[in-house]
Figure 1 (tube, rainbow, N blue to C red):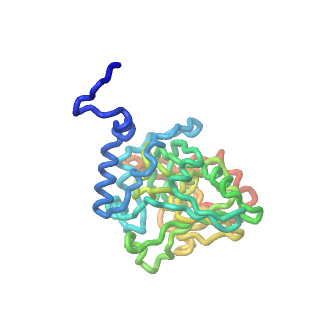
Figure 2 (figure 1 turned 135 degrees about the vertical axis):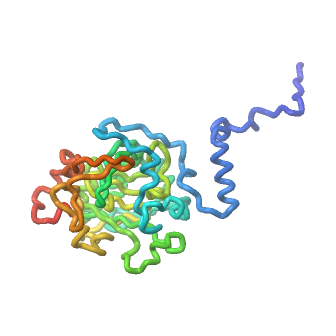
Length: 312
């Protein structure tokens, strides 16, 4: 019988590093250094194998895609400061582990780990316009879970008419939350009809990668036909309720920021026009579109609500 003797440098195949681990060695080393330093785990450490997700070609853009660096470095996130340059400050937010609590008028309240949620419901990429109430705009590829799929998972009861979203609350890492004149934590709300429309996404990624903290990691809302302040970041709690919730900006200044906040060029903000928008990363301005260009999908949601203040 032939007996093969291994050289001293050889090892059994079963002991070899798996290919996937080898290819991700930089990420693993980085995660180890972060842990050793006691620093927060960045969103990029979470479920990287799910990105880039399959693109849903039903959602296209008729405007140029915004450069990734432009979108990454111009952000509102008042929890970390009032300037647009909050990238470094936002990295103090630990996004792993992260859970989302589901409560209120549902069959059975539950809390779900973020990673588990990503593997329970399919992700897809969509190209969307994004319009800030400050009259700047961008167009980006978001990756996320259709909100209507999440609603189905939550199994709301018939009495649930609205969904209330609540972000994290931790003034130790988010110094803006120490400013007591703001009604922290940040909250937002949608009707069940809006939430089960085809457009809203629970976003977990951008530009084919996991969401960075300045964009609201690890999970945020995107409602592309509404002004950006409706798209709450870093969601911790989702509640199904019977009464319309008072949202963050509505509670702070209801005369300027209403519950509905649908984009409309004909309805100015009390302090500036909404007729046009500044394209992020460019000197160009372009006309603002009603419902930010998504009227075909969402205008029907507001029939019979003409008495409501739908556009601010």
